[in-house]
Amino acid sequence: MSDDTIRLVTIGRIIRRRRRLLTVLAVVGALVGYGTSLLLPPRYTTSASVLLPGAWEERELLTQAEIATSSVVVDRAAAALDWSGTDGVELRERVTAQTADGNIVKISGTADSPERAQQLADQVARQFVSFAARIAGDGTDPEAVGGPEALRQMVVQTSRRITELAEDSTGQSVESVQTRTELAKLRTALQEAVRKLDEADPAADQADMVVMGPAARPTGEAPPTRIQLVAGGALLFFLIAVVGHLAAARMSRRLRTEAEIAAALGSASLGIVDVPGAPAAPRPEDTGRWAGLRRLVGADVRWDVPPPQASGDEAGRRVRYRRVHARLRERLPDPRELLVVVPEGDGTALRAAGQLLAEAGGEGPVLRTVEVPVAGPLVPDRDGESGVLVVLSAGLWTAEELAGVAGACADAGHEVVGIVLAGAGWAPSARSAGRPRPPAAPALAVGDDTRGVSR
Image 1 (cartoon, rainbow, N blue to C red):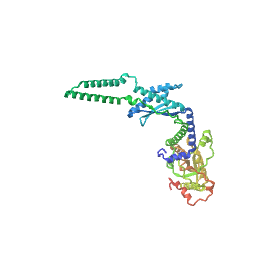
Image 2 (tube, rainbow, N blue to C red; image 1 turned 90 degrees about the vertical axis):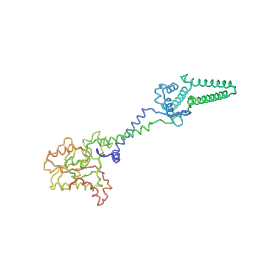
Image 3 (spheres, helix red, strand yellow; image 1 turned 120 degrees about the vertical axis):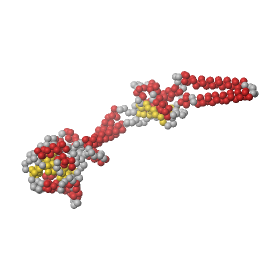
Image 4 (cartoon, rainbow, N blue to C red; image 1 turned 135 degrees about the horizontal axis):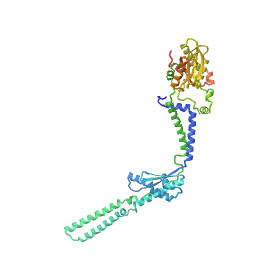
């Protein structure tokens, strides 16, 4: 798994085999989301729109949006609302402003009730318009406001003087006519300058901001709502569980393939057998509280090892065991005793060893099963046995643990003559067990058992 590419089939296998555990974790995540929703008070959000007449550039609109959420405007709104325990600093976290098409600034307010959210948005909009009008009109800088007006008065006075000079030039000489003509042109230029000054007056374009009606009263909570928190918690815990499974599989050092296990034990594989998938009787070391909980939520179901090719029914399963016996007879022509070593704690392999003994049929070597702990392996000394047959499940043991079992066999004077991999298959139903099987089915069911076997 550490070198394999994560594919959708891998995630599907996790969901299929650990569905009970994933369901429990999703329910826990939903409960966590529900508890979080109880700690967070409900929030309601609404918006009030302010129209800015005239021609505005984009950066100017962004500046107005920043002014709408400035401390001056929000502090004035807080003073006007006079909510108990709420100041401008807290309100600034609940007020936002953004620009929209058509020179519109949308001011949004968030509060713990629909009424307060509506009041907050309307009050901030009003204070923004008032503050903008003060800046554009009667601001705090008298010189900036009085300068254009003084210039207008000066232009009017100059125009009157030009008129007086033109009336004094009553002669009919060429010089008098030219003087009156030049004065008329100068007066026209001054009047045009006054007109352009009036058009360029910023107060004429920017002072008449309009609040486009009161904010609508919100009818639903602002996200995240309680339903969103519950669904988000369930999804988050589900994804964490799936990612945790993938990370654990990539970090695991347990051997999962037939070739890796055979190399660790220094022998060849004699085949792959399966046992019915019904749970075995509880072992003494598996009767603790945590072991029962693991079985309840399905955490004891292996997902990272592909299931063996199902035999289909009991007859096909027995064919596999008989083929293992045939390969043993090829390796050991003399019918002597053979020690079957099963790692301690491997319940599937122990059931497979029992089925292997039951299918011996009086032919081939006599089998004797022993369980060996992998932490401190100790194999009985050789006493007439012709070798050791190791029966184990894939994905449970590391290379170091299996090398320790092989070393313990060598210390006891035994030779590992072969290994048999055991897996949990589907338990045959009564209907399928009583139904006659087509003649070609057994050969197809055990076709993969010959992989890695020397003939």
